[in-house]
Amino acid sequence: MIDHRRLGRELDLFVSDPLAGAGLPIWLPAGAAARHAVEEYVRELERRCGHQHVYSPPLGKRELFELSGHLGYFADDMFPPMRLSADDEFVLRPALCPHHALVFRARGRSYRELPLRVAELGGMYRSERSGVLGGLSRVRAISLNDAHTFCAPEQVGAEVVEILGLIRAAHAALGVRPAGFRLSLRGPGGRYVGDDAQWAHAEDLLRGALAGVEYVEAPGEAAFYGPKIDIQIVDAAGRESTISTIQLDFDKPERFDLSYTDSDGSRRRPVMVHRSLVGSMERLFAYLIEVHEGAFPAWYAPVQLVLLPVDDGQVDAARELARRAVDAGLRAEVDVAGSLGARVRDAARRRVPYLGVLGAREVADGHLALRLRGGDALAPMPAGAALALIGGQVAARSADLLPPD
Ligand SMILES: [Zn+2]
Image (cartoon, rainbow, N blue to C red; front, side, top):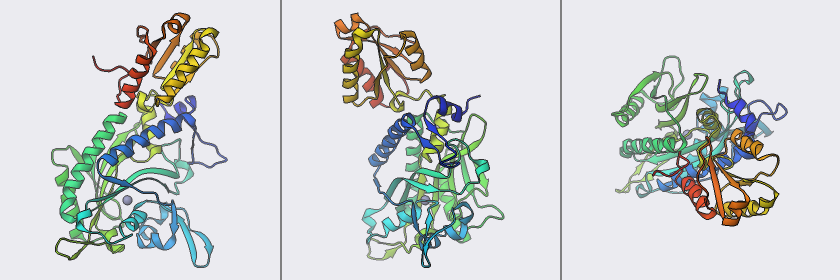
């Protein structure tokens, strides 16, 4: 059975050390390289679509989370406050929204700035019980791909449709295969803020944005502040979880007294749309490791090219070529330890997408013989052309190792 925890160990992607604490995994260099590539991609996608990135701290004063409603509605999922002095208590944040509301509030806002999209890949914390923790799928320290759009009420529908398009683009590039769309609604027994009219209006807006999409309705799965569209995945063990989400919130703009100046000079209240394209880096990678069985697309493979000199005579040429590959932006290594067969098997075990074999003949000709993950071998080609081929597939963030014919 495929299990991201076993693959994570075999591929040196991350480690969970009891001394660090359960649910607090450490990303090793290979896992960090893959995550870095994915983070860069997500930021670029967001930048192209008008998002502005910010940084905010993963903890804040108790009063911030009282104002946001988190301490009132969500305290069971939070770490207890840390007291520095009688009137100075801090909490590890359970969400980024309060800080992003402060970004909006940092100065006066005009209708011309809307929709204002504030994005951050930021840290947050959940006090999960140790029994439910495992690998990357359930953690206590979360790195969330998050954004909040502040928009005029009449802009909400179009914004949700646009975000759905961004989510589809991100899923296609990463190889995420959603199991289904869910409209998460209020349910009996839950604690929710806001009045019935607000909830009904928000639900109507989300239903409208989902026109033409197959989805199920899930009473009881809404956030405490509003309904949401959740995009679900199923892991190798058959467990369902949410990878992407779009949530409407009429409540936080009230609590933080957010407003903008409209074209007629009047003050108006924006609507806050919370959204995550790919969820947390932890849960995303738990899923990607399993769905690709560790063989990531070349663009976020930890090592993209391993160069294998056939014998000692080609080691210098291999190191020089690796340097050229790294200069060209690729993640490349030279492996000289052991027989050629053993090195080929080791690269296959590590799911390296491209192997470059350098014998005396290739070095003399300035050529490289590429082998693709999976075993296909290409005829030797000029080394520069081989690097360009790999660079092209990486730049295109292609799922394939070769360009289309
Ligand atoms: Zn939020």
